[in-house]
Image 1 (cartoon, rainbow, N blue to C red):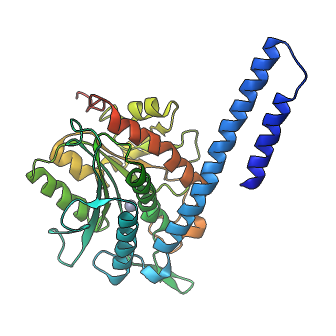
Image 2 (image 1 turned 90 degrees about the vertical axis):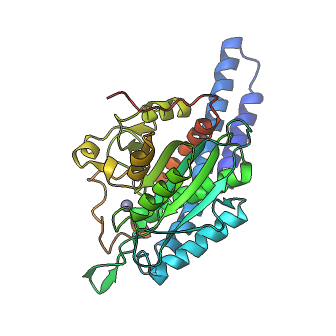
Image 3 (image 1 turned 120 degrees about the vertical axis):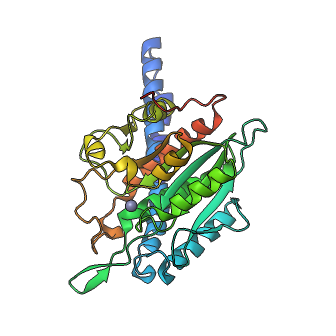
Length: 334
Ligand SMILES: [Zn+2]
């Protein structure tokens, strides 16, 4: 990092000390320096976040957690780890504790639910749920003596994104609407954690604006867009996210429609209960990762800088989503 900063200050000093040029040259060199500055600063942020991402995901997908099957001891270690991070970073439990025990599963399993209350008295009763499932399948088909399905991309990667975003909003509290950060259990058993929580919140008249879910963001797509969103045509969420980012960060993947991905992750129970925009951001495009539900889905196969990029682009998008005076994200008419 020091090296980057040194190069940057050398460039800035270089521009300042140039002999007196005409006005055109001045504005040209100033804009070049500021462009370089912004590129360097976003690269520095990526490298810094990539290190944090690596640390979190390496723990979540370690053999110690035995593939994080819902109801197992391994997933409990992940839960305790997430709770500690929430506590340390100013997130409050939405219920009595961070643990929300599933009513939909025959073994003891729980979602982790942390909240950052909105800072605007008029908007804080409106909620955005930011989620990812933190469970995986436990053991997989053994390969070379390895039988632990570590679930690094699926879905320690989404879990890590939610943790990093929770840390940001917990510390900075820049959100007018309230944010609920949820790590779901038993997604792999049939979306049981999200089915349970969506129904429970619906019963208490929870004022849900949108639900944004993260799944398999561990490797870049083999195409131009940074991410795609499931249920692209259901709402104007992608269009608004791109407007909030000031560039295209969310795209459309035809395969997501073919495989009905909109209905295959934890966003769907929220759509079902509330009929509001509830969608999943993903970078698994069916061609970029051969280890889906495979024992080799390990952190060593992932691209932490890519993940950092996704998280860094999504934080300001979420921030703007929480702060618009009106609800701008809407379901499309059918
Ligand atoms: Zn998954």
